[in-house]
Length: 471
Image (cartoon, rainbow, N blue to C red; front, side):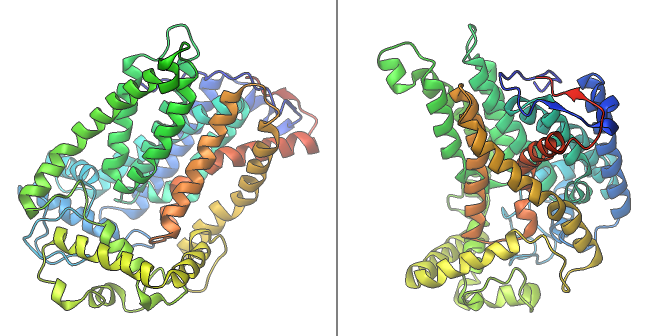
């Protein structure tokens, strides 16, 4: 489904470059350059996996891997989705949990069941998959939206982006989740491109789109909040391909395709919904974590300045939960906390606005801080800190120049990435914010960073070598 082909585009900017050092590299065939980028990406991610090793510890930013490892061991041993002892957030030992990603837990459990409880092996498999798919998908998106050079530079940035290869060695959902989002965006672009051909959109395209949705949502259910915007974008872009009449007015082909893809998504989620009802005796679509996030993220303990980690640690988070709610099972408690969290917002909307604004500091932090360790500071400054100026410049270029394009489809393609950045960022500014929750946005913004970098190299003519950004 995801082959190394060259997406087409009628856009030829930024045009010719004079880059002596990169001339020979970028003059190689696209497949060769991309394979070299993938090799670097896989190598760095394997090094990260080896560094994190076979032990599962509380490394900076990856505390959740302790929970995923413990849960996967229980599933592999036949105990189902439960912990042997009490676990975060307030799950009691031996009782069912739906707080964690089912798909990622099953991935770890499958590795442990087949090869033994070897976290290092799970890290290495994950590193290889991410090292191949992340650059490939970012290349496809960058090439389709701009040109081959932007696509290749974006892929290269993703290969060496410190956050990406650091988290690729951690037993948490981020790495596969980013791959899922990129896959889904690539599917959306290919669906709209196929609609412009004589063959049109085939059912296989909608099937792949549905599978990509299912994988992404099963890794992180928060992505469900972005799907309405993605559906609307697809409907709007595909309805114009219809023949005249009521079918074009309704966007009938798009409606049928989206309905089919939604059915695929529903079939992937339903087994876990059934499991949740049997486990908790109440309806839970997928995971029991939205209520906890809204409750803790908007609790009055923050005042008007969000604290990403409370000084009292996990115990302080538990102590914030009203005692009369603690006897409830995990699903009932999640629903109760959601109601309280929403009530916090309703009771004091002014504080909620100020609290959400304060989250910007944590979400977009790119500078070193005294309360962070060496690894965290290096990762932050060496990835987002370096790329942020190019990301912003690339966004400005895209906004300034896309309106000069004759093809509306190219404007809408760029708009989709920006819509994702705005919506996904807003979701976390209104709830719970950590730097690693921003990483899917980083992946998309690297396409704009690549545009900014290539344009600067063109304008400044940093070297005498010359090559053309072929489309």
